[in-house]
Length: 107
Ligand code: SF4
Ligand code: SF4
Image 1 (tube, protein in one colour):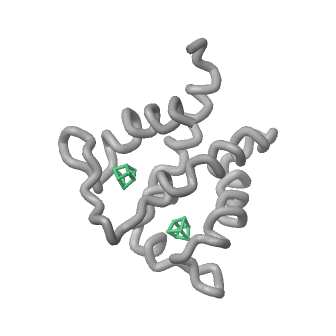
Image 2 (image 1 turned 180 degrees about the vertical axis):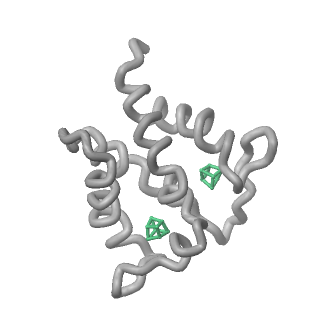
């Protein structure tokens, strides 16, 4: 999982609106980043999905991850998502791309 974490730090944290110019996360101890918290599950989902439809994959992620995320309400709504404040939702396409690039990398 280290190689995925490293790649996420380098490619997602680096451009995240919740990071400094140097890519350091600015979330407080009371805040949690869904990408960091659920990375193993995200990687697993991307590996298991054999289709090519990114919208379908996004729905799967919501089904599997948002469904048990503490921020999600009973109706499936999420105030962080609605405010474009969840890094997983915000950078979903980039995250999937980064995971695939790690998989294709020879190292
Ligand atoms: S919120 Fe998540 S994606 Fe953004 S900088 Fe922090 S750890 Fe990285
Ligand atoms: S969109 Fe909301 S429910 Fe889904 S992972 Fe992000 S914070 Fe959790």
